[in-house]
Amino acid sequence: ATSDKERSDYNHYLGWAYYDMGEYSKALSSYEQSLEIRKIALLPNHPDLASSYGNIGNVYKDMGEYSKALSSHERSLEIRKIALPPNHPDLAASYNNIGNVYRSMGEYSKALSSYERSLEIRKIALPPNHPDLAASYNNVGLVYNNMGEYSKALSS
Image 1 (cartoon, rainbow, N blue to C red):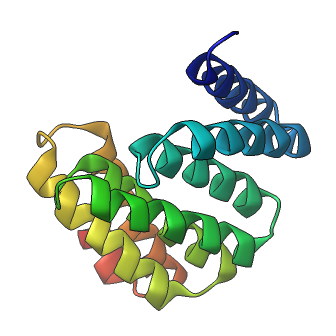
Image 2 (tube, rainbow, N blue to C red):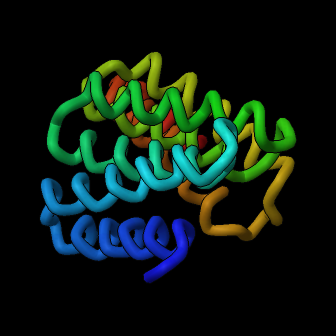
């Protein structure tokens, strides 16, 4: 890979492969290398930076490092709020990722708030049979189930 874009994309996809194999430290290293290249090569609020921060956040979440995960996902969301229209599906993905971290932490009211924001955007941005919309309904239901609010879980 010769260009900055090619090098950052290579590391990004390598990170994905490591992540899918559960090799989180290698995934994190690859994602961070991609991010460093992107920080130099791209404008400060480029959507690719948000993707890098989001992927880094997912790795930290799965490693149980929740404060680092939240920090990464919140940075991703900040960039997306600046770079994208208000109902872009990538914004919904950021809110969903933040909800995943809070749910893993057992902070269900915060998770619910994030999941509901994700769902609101996805209802507007996606067709009614889109799998991400179904995932949002499922996540809202899972949190209600975690909270012991079973009737709300069933209606989600």
